[in-house]
Length: 471
Image (cartoon, rainbow, N blue to C red; front, side, top):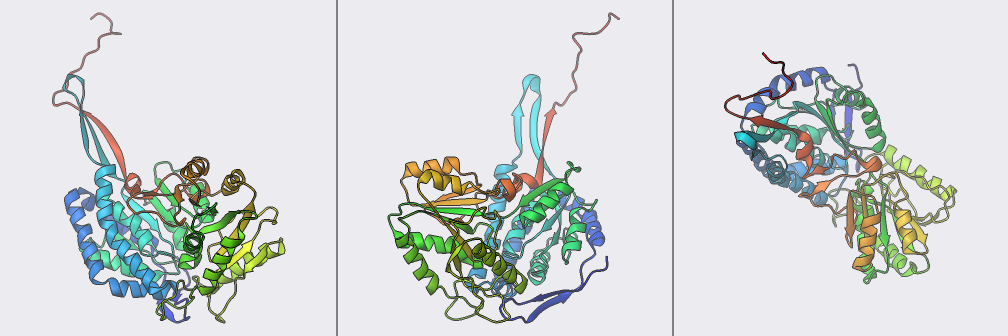
């Protein structure tokens, strides 16, 4: 498959970090197909031990791994260390999840018949990874798939090939057979070829809703293959009568601007009570103005870094301008402080008077404020989206949160916590354009193996008591 060379550059500096040719999808799928049966035949204890060795290998190289993630994504180094810690922690979480979600069960039936429930791996699973968490998020698919007995063909984002390459190397260094975890570098052509390849038994995807919808259509005529879609969100954050305005402003900052807004769970819409919002707005803008924007290794450490590349920055600036042209009132503009680099200042814009607001995920540091007259309107506005990933309420009594929880449609609903706060030992996923009811994290075990129900008896005994002619 002829394709252009893949080149990865550091977002913060523009320096070249990695260069290579796209991978051979057919060859990598064939290698995984030839290897998975032996891996699946190994005991669960064997596969779990291999996963624990992987955690130890990552632990020994966590500084170098975090440094590479920081350079290739532009995220602050402190955040990349947290990502590597999540990679390590995922092992114990995945082992526990497999034991709970896919445990072998035996039930006694009538006449000595035993009922057994066991799980089988699918075979070869493709994993398409994103650039915002290029180690943690694909690892959240790969580890559960390996523990279940699958082989994996992994294509990292074309923005983060170096991190993808290192992640696979760490698996191999841990003793997981090279044929069981394969790497395909590439861009859209390789992603399309891998996701629709006849040699895979399923696809585990993290990325945009647009790509996810294309994949869903492509899989419409292949119900034999598993498809798990983890997509984005146009996430609402409702702040209503907070007792601590400063704490509420901090939650808003964390929700909207962590990772330069490049988290699928970041708040995109801030919904506030009209007429009572000014004290909150004053606190929020003071904090925005204090946020340090910088390169990964800067001192003092920055709160957030650049977005992934100049094209993403250009698209965000164009979207922000579009909101202004439709009547949005900028409170903090989306400026480009470093010429030629994709650094963007955290932006806040009042879109209350914008008719037909675009229901899109602006994947960057852009927060849209919407003023509403009452809490019923706040709930209605929160649900005014095709997405359904995360939502959060800050403030209010428990009864108000109960109303919010019951009426907002999302897979992650928080109270007095950021929209992007989700524990790894719980399911993670969304509804609507945010997912296809295949939540990941603790529930990833559900889509990495399928249940088999068996009725078993040592000696065949059978009779037909009705419907036979006399003989």
